[in-house]
Image (cartoon, one colour):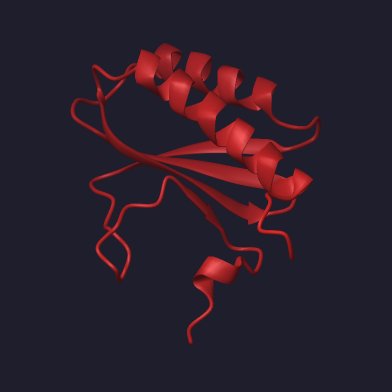
Length: 107
């Protein structure tokens, strides 16, 4: 935006990010690091590096909570991964979009 403000779409993304972070903080006992990846317009992947393997029922509750935050019809998948690497700048990104985010452009 020309005035330096935050667009309505960006505000929505920030609200979702805060809500997801809050849900994940409830589960902090077993989560070491996480990232939320939007692969398609109707699919997001929650990648989690776990300190200990969570029980299946814990993953189901987490998936249901995250699904409830998103638009109807958005598929949420949870992937447990051994680790999550920082980006090329050394920072971890909690939200990542594969839909042409300006942050992913190589200049």
